[in-house]
Image (tube, rainbow, N blue to C red; front, side, top):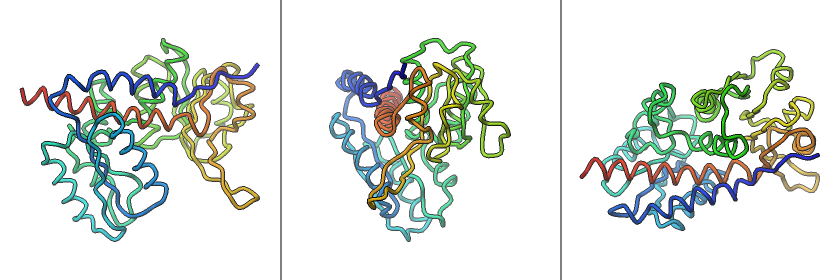
Length: 287
């Protein structure tokens, strides 16, 4: 028996269709601004995908570009200008930023009401308090994938590998809100394979290709793979691989996300959803 493959594109389309049905209720099209510093090829691809989806939906998407050597003060000034614009409902600063820029300071400068990446400390705090918040898009999308298989997570043992502010910590918080029992592991965790074998829901977000082997997985577990590592092939090309050894895991798990076509499409769909949510909240405040 092989696992159910969770097609991120198919599930993302459900979210996109719902958004499309709500746009006509707004006084104007929501505006999304993505801030890109430098010319990192992967970041450029991600930004283009986000803006294309916004435009496809009828949102107004734009990219604010700064050079690699832009100063932190230049970036902060750009963010402040976007905060002040009435036609921009959502702001996303594409990560990673150059080493000379303090990412936390930049995230703190984004208006929390426009923080569609859910990384401002105020939104993070609201999430951990169980309050309404703009939630980081990738873990939000992954929760949707998990619940497409198991709608009630009450009491389920979930193991999250990774403790980043972007994915690992908010993923754990979302699972706790669903009343799952959550074990969060990280690079210093001892006996990690044993812990993972106890998980009914296993989420990996560390960026290490093939870390999770088939014998780490409990039979019929739901496995969510955030990993996207470029691995060189013998022919000089490269493949994008996840944290999970897919060929092994698919023989054990009950459901699993592929890489690619798994988490990525849901991240972009939930970014659009967050932009719509921010626009609706802004329109309500202005009434």
